[in-house]
Amino acid sequence: MLPLWVIVGVLTIGGMVTAGVTYYFTPKYTRVGYTPSQPVAFSHRIHAGQLGMDCRYCHSFVEESGHANVPATQTCWNCHQHVKKDSPNLAKVVESMETGEAIPWVKVHQVPDYAYFDHSVHVNRGVSCVDCHGRVDEMTKVSHDQPMSMSWCLDCHRAPEQKLRPLDQVTNLGWKPENVDRQALGERLKKAWNIHPPESCGACHR
Image (cartoon, rainbow, N blue to C red; front, side, top):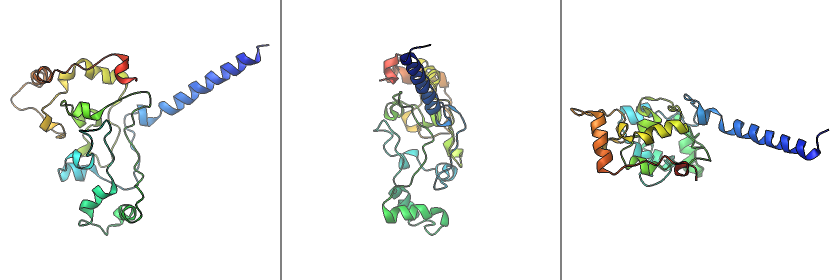
């Protein structure tokens, strides 16, 4: 018969492993295509695509913060107090403005607790939103576009010149270089900005 402490230890470790797998290996972390329903049907295809709104109008802290903030209701209301404010689709926006309660948006892209990622570092060095989030300007409902696994991040850190672009094109999701080789442009930007992305464990796991 096994000692009680061995049985308890095995069960504890098994429970921790099960909890970890259940928590981290869910669609919001690993499955490309995760597309949750939102409390308000906000179409990026219309706003960022058809209307050409810059990502930074709503995600206003992305150049200064580690996080790409979810816009406050006031950001929506700046426009919609004048445009379709009586639409039933905007009922929760109106309610949020009246009550002061935030709209409970569902996060599509969630960095795991064990990883560190700083948006400002990337966008201020020519990494576009599209490289991680895909063609959001073509999405009616935002989907999880890239795997965001450790190996996926390292691929970019090891060859950043393949992703770099001029800073004024970072939020232009459909940008393509004209009359210049993309690789050569990236190498020039990498050298000019002295970009040397870390590959050590401590860069992301702090």
